[in-house]
Image (cartoon, rainbow, N blue to C red; front, side, top):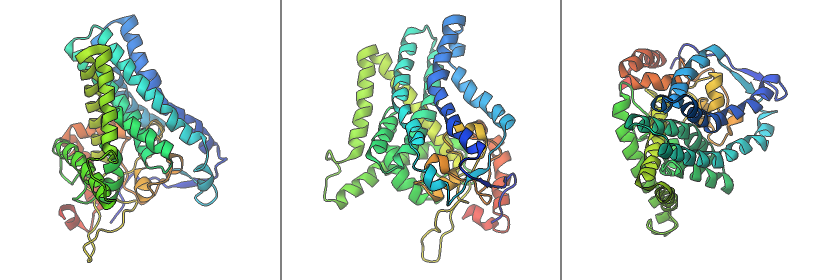
Length: 382
């Protein structure tokens, strides 16, 4: 396979380099959507009016402003020294603290979102816009950080990640992503890997359905191996979905049916944002099937990578997705850029906008996929 154009050359530096130190504290940017964006939108409604327009402000900022800023700020291909600094940085308490502090912030944000939903005089368009905005912020905070946390071994982080996902009613991701997606990524068996020439709108229904079903199947298999019933309280999905139900009940008790509707609506939009990200992360890439019937080992060339600095700070380096799949236990701060990984032409925010319009997506991404498989064009339809 050939690597795509727009690869940047990785540069290794020590942990005391100014760029590593600056990024250490710049990750605070990731908490801005949940602490500033939604309250700022409400402030605009309160002081300026035009409630239905301000309801969409977070969506406009994430998918309109950030893609522009990504290209103005530029890319970052700096890696910490693998032998000398990665082990030390992986143990620093500051980095997990940032992910854990987001848990109460996320829960507070959805209740704040519910209060705004019930107390601002939105039209139905504004109501949908506000649910979409809260869902987009939930996708950035609850699902992205839930994803980071469920990959870790400590019980605290596992529970924190599950709670984050339960706050947007997508706890099945905790099971399916780790035990399903990371095993089958970039193969036809994976519900979260999009195929060459598959539109986003073909992908989304299968992703929602298969991920939900796969999560229950994987948890049932785990329990059966231990001699337990899938319908017992040992089934972690029962617990997580029960917590989601408790959230919905809480919203109902405080604000009635409209409150419960808001909770379900923001959950749907957060989950949809996740699946759109899944679509762009592996589009058109797949692992070869070996002579023994197994697939080749997951490596750094089976995921699209993006080194746009601003979005990487907002998403705790989720865009260094190639390294994440090759080394899923790595913490976000030590994920690396690889020259051989296929590179996206923009950050995730910009790529989501492209994916919404399939002709534009195919025009931009299909040539990159084809260039990646140059000399092995038969791989495109395998």
